[in-house]
Image 1 (cartoon, rainbow, N blue to C red):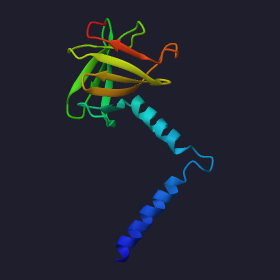
Image 2: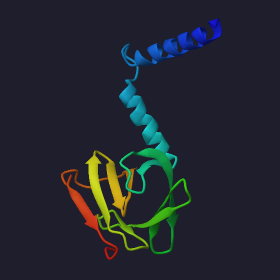
Image 3: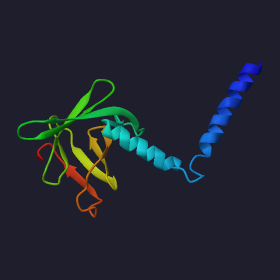
Image 4: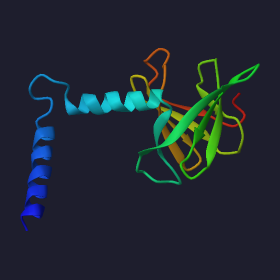
Length: 144
């Protein structure tokens, strides 16, 4: 019986120590989470909400493919599905490379966008020109 109590004590101690992070001048928890998310995005891992879900999880991966005339962004789902987008150089962002789903881009804040295509949503790091355009941009399959 003492073993379960000591496990609970260890978990409680761990949670208490994590709760105190950031209060002594170290990196705050929110900043540490943001930094971890940024590093994961640099490693090709992004958060996504698939099939109409509103729950974002870091289960999608990205890769860029450079062709002779363009660059493509491929977003892969954990279940094997994927979406391909053409990276546009005219300031519009991305356009679907195949399929008929409408694609929308919403600026979430400094250097972050939410890309919606069909029932799937992806949150990506982005270089946003003229930060003043924080509205939504639409891109159809014909845009590009």
